[in-house]
Image (cartoon, one colour):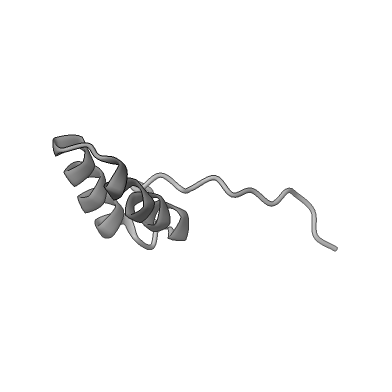
Length: 50
């Protein structure tokens, strides 16, 4: 029997268990340097895969 709840919240990229921390960090840095709507889908995808 499973106990607990399923969530869709992304794991923070600084967690050791985050699988795509390097990619998420690069995309987050690129977005901070030059924000734009076109960069958000890739950033969200990398964050949610972690």
